[in-house]
Length: 429
Picture 1 (tube, rainbow, N blue to C red):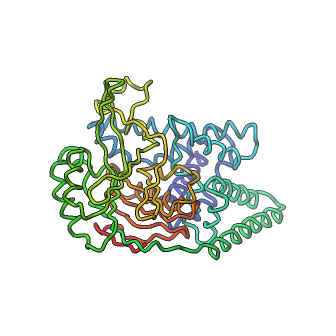
Picture 2 (picture 1 turned 135 degrees about the vertical axis):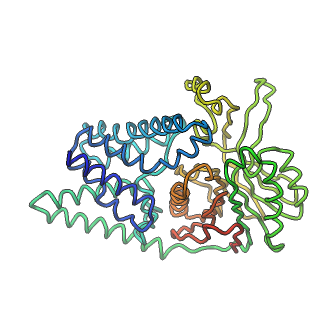
Picture 3 (picture 1 turned 90 degrees about the vertical axis):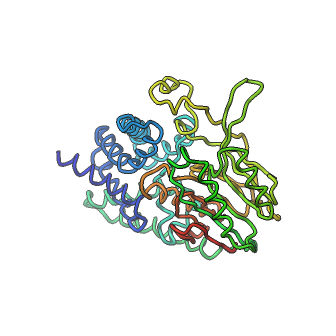
């Protein structure tokens, strides 16, 4: 019984390191139970407790979809069990052959880029590096997967130091690892030079409750008009979050009313496919210049069950009417927005979690999102962490534009410049 209790406590420590930025150091020993007792039951228990602690805020989103607390809990448990079996169960199986857990675990993280469905690359272990002063800047060179390997290797070395009588080689290995990471971090710190674009931008985070977006969208429009009117006239570009508008006639009128303004804004609307004779929806980011839509990006990585229902889960629509609604369709390419020869790469919602190469043309990444679906600020802070990881990895500032707070800029040196609660933020890029 004692080992199960201690395993659960260590799993909670790892969850704490994700949810509270100053506690990143807990990750350096929180995975010790996986090295101490290499049994499937321990791996499963650890993953179950960890993911429950990480994802209980999804209950709010589930309830908004199902209108049933029972179904909300069932959906959460199915999600948590699936992720536990994938990340921790498969890591255990891989480790039976590879015999080195850091490598086995990272291979499963890479696999999660592609499965389940279109991939689930959220909350990678290596994301925690973005909160580590100086050392974390080595993300730029070794990526989030490299840092997942590093964190697990540190846990392995700590375990060996605690267990073995001959500790010297493990202590030296730990010191050498920190030395290399420190050198890489300092090199990145000294080599990065920011090139200002001399644009003034406004980030608007309207704090509209999700239940109002779903049921009272008509009444949110005057509020948005009010907020835009508060933005100083010398601002070059106004950024509005994901799904700010959900009906084409609303945002068409809005842009015409503000034709002296320029926007990057998230919208969604329903389209009729005349070839297939069916309706579908798209989650888009628009670049609007003087009242005219100049460029459109369609979200490429959709959220299963939130934006579409996988074909072999169609039967769930009988239990959960929301899942029987019109599916979203994914875009098939990136679009780089060109505003006055400054180039912005749009990312919608949790697309920012996908590691990828970006064009050398890109000056800024813009992450438009709406995290009002979730309880509290846990998910928002972890979303912000993913944005920070991408900023460090790519060397591009990420502008985080969220409906319900923590808007701001994540710099390639891991700094957050913003305000969690202010509705209008002004930045000189």
